[in-house]
Image: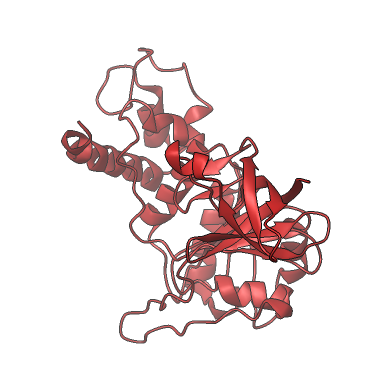
Amino acid sequence: MRKRGIVVGFHSSMALVEDLETSEEILCKLRGKFKKQGIKVIVGDRVEYSSDGVGGGVIENILPRETFLPKPRIANVDQVVLVTTVRSPEVPLYIFDKFLVLAERAKIPTIIVFNKVDLLIEGDLKRLEELESYYGRYYKTLRTSVVDGTGLSDLKEVFKGKVSAMAGMSGVGKSSLLNAINPGLRLRVGEISEKLKRGRHTTTSVRLLKFDFGGYVADTPGFANLDISDIEEDELKDFFVDFREYDGMCAFADCIHVSEPGCYIRRLVAQGEIASHRYENYLKMLDEISHKAPERS
C-alpha cells in the first residue's frame, strides 16, 4: 500500500520522508528505476512510498513539482522569505538583488524581512525607510528584531500553513528568528565576527523543518555566490520586477536597456522612477553573465 509524504532531508544516501497523515519520519531509499533514468529526489518533493517491511520505506513515485528553486534545490516552495540587514552586517544590495532575480525566475513570491532593526541609528533608519519605500512597491516587507520582539508575531503569520524557503547572507539572523517564533526548533546561532563583520555559517545543508503552528521552512545555507550564469542576457530584464511593469514601452521590442535609442527604462532611471542602484546592479549582472557565456557553450 502506497502512502504519501514530503521529503524533509537526507541521511547518507537515504531520503527522510515525513508522512503527510501521521507526521512520522521514515528513511526511504529510491527505486532503482529512478537512478537509471537519472531522476533525483530533492527536499520538498511530494512522494508516494511503501514500507520495506523493516521500519524503512521505498519511494515509488515522485509527484509533479509545482515550483522549483534551483539554488538551494527545493521543490514545491510557496514563498521565499528573504532576510536582510542594514547593519551588522550591511548586506550588499548586489547580492540582495541577485537573489530576488533568482526568486523571480523561479516564479516564487518573495517576502523581504529587514532584521535587527533594534541596532539601527538615525542614518540607518533613513536608509531602511528608503529601501522599504522602493522595494515595498513590489514585495511585502517586514521589520523584525529578536531583541525587542518587533514583527515576530507578523512573521509567524507569514510562515503559518506554507512551505517557505528562508534565505539570506550569513549573520543576518535567520536561525535566531526561527528560534524566536518556534523555540522547539533549537537551531544553532552563529556569532558575528568583529573583524569581518560577517556571520559564520550555521546551516550547512537544506533541511525542511516543521513549525509547531503549521507549515514548513527550509533554513538554507547563507548565500554569497549566487550563480546566474545560466540566465540568458536577453532574459535577465524579465526578472527585474520594476523593469517588467514597463514591458513594451521601449522603442525596440528586443531592447535590453543598455544603449539602445528610445529605451524607456533608462529614461525612468534618469527621472528617479527606477532606483539607480537597481539599474547599476542589472548592468553588473549582465556583465557577469556575458563573461561566463563562453563557459556555457
